[in-house]
Length: 305
Image (cartoon, rainbow, N blue to C red):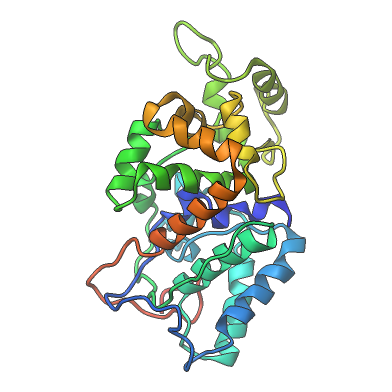
């Protein structure tokens, strides 16, 4: 699978506000109303893997309008370029099961399928989410950023009922990751009064990143893969972080904090353990964001009904 599919399971995107109904989620939610839903989504993800798509969450799918700047155009999500894989799945689902499967559920299932197709673990996705009626770029302000430190990340996750172990496990989604220069260039030059370059960044990697992200930089697509096996879901991300080669501040800070260091090191040693914890954390993440207000099932994931 092409590397840029990664952001289905990137923390910044999955936490971007999957909108759910008050009703309990159920792994068999579409068993009667749309039994082929998961196979249709899998087919769309599989077909899209050859075209290098990126993922997103339900409110991130909505396009901006002249009167509203949508979440997809908010700072943490500016690297999301291709939403068509979700559009393709939704188009097929609307033909098979009109007005039935929410965009939020499509994203949750697609996230799992991306991981599986990339060689990672599987898990059962509970469904029954509804789509939000509002998408605003302001909603991205509260998302953890690549420059967040571990304390900030732990606090952000705790607000969503997720633990430090969930934080480290879900960070492993960066194993399929690619980042544009803007997300890490602050580590490369004028980092602080004492250091031009972030001292926690491995010197060899720092030199490589400076070469790929010069100043000025006329290449809007310039950037860096977040591990050495960016098309394979594995534990190489943790080995790189353990060696001082985390691309983001948020990645490398996991090694420097006693609350998360031991988890990083454990996952770097044991890929099977990482796979188990990642799947468990994705299940917990799938239950984040239950609200009382009613949602909808969008007929077009880019537009509120």
